[in-house]
Image (cartoon, rainbow, N blue to C red):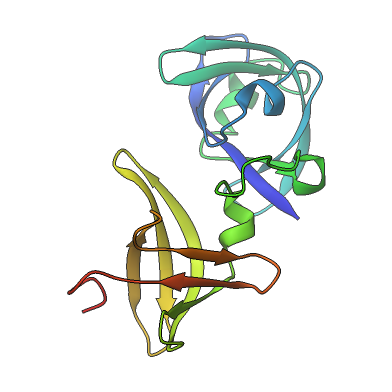
Length: 170
C-alpha cells in the first residue's frame, strides 16, 4: 500500500526542480537523498522517481529527481501525488499518533455502538486534522480528530469511536 508524502505544486526554474507541498510528518526520511517515491500523475499513471536534491523553500520543498532533467519534464508532473510504500514507514512509538493510511477505511461508531460510516480520508487543515467520514445513510461528515471527540482508535479492530458534541453530525 502507498501513502501520500507530497504533491507537486509546480515546476521551479529551468533545471527540472519541483516545488512540493509536503504531506508527511517526517519529510527528512521521505525526502532523503536517494529515496525513491512513486509519482501518481493526473492521468492515473505512475512512475518511480529517485531524489537527487532537496532544499527548503518556505512551506514547501524544492526537489530534483534523477529522471527529470529539465523544466518541460517538470511541468508534466504538476499536480502529481508523491507516494511512499507504507512498508517502509517506521512504526510510531506514540500510541496516540497514526498514519493517515491506518485511519482511512476504519468504520466510525458512536459511543453507544451506532455506526456512523467509514473514514474516507484524513484532512490536514490549519486548525488540525479532520476525519472525512462517508455516512452510512449517504453524505459526509467532518469529525475533528481530537481525543475529546474521538476517544478510541482501534486499528486492529478497524474502528474508531466518536463522541460528538451536539450538532456535529446534524
